[in-house]
Image (cartoon, rainbow, N blue to C red; front, side, top):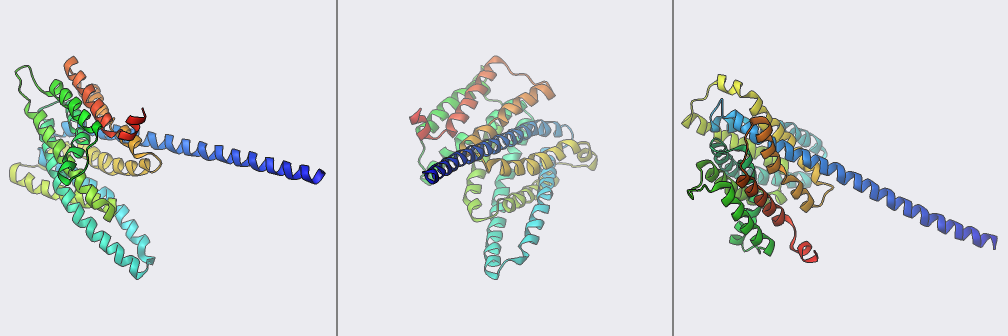
Length: 330
């Protein structure tokens, strides 16, 4: 009888321990999710403030000079990681090295393709920012989240009801944000909208190559590709000077080191312990931070009409990222 009680006590202790272990694991997961959320929030802040850096940089250098400089800096920031990865891979087998060489080749090809679209989209954005406010540029650029699924129609991808609703809401937001009382759209707003289409195509190219290669390789190669193309365009259409580049050192370093190197790294770390939908929703705050940064740092204010347009665009961005299944459950 006494021995039976001991067995029951042992079983109860096991259940209690299992329950406590489960709570500990949940607590650890909750802490990891919280840290990841904070990292992605910081990423969105870094990218939002980058709009200000791009705007300020244009006071000293041309658009191609600024892009060429920041992309080359961004590429150099990622080089140490690639060299470190190569060093750690010296003990791999012949078969593993063959696979890695194939992935590296794919990464280089993908990086070149991505770099071409990145250069196109960034150039349109840079020229657009010169004629519009930082806040409006942030919200219009973020429309790529709505545009990407629509471009997917050409590749026979299905588009959910939430995307079509997002398009309608975003169209209303864009009307309030960009169309004037004379029913015309500003040059800067149009250029930034074309930039959003360019970034949408850039994302689709990344989506094609990223499963087949190392993401950092693609990113590094794309930065150098976009940088070199921008440098060629810089010498063709602009008159760059070391004085202008050195005067713009802070915007260039911020856009190159923080926005490209640090932002990219934080995104990789932050997305590890979060649901992709939650991660994309947090990073959508980039447009909000861009508007706040433009207001606080540059003193750029928006009218009530433009703010309502921003709210509608942001609502469309959020709706586009919520899976249809979750909307049905709601």
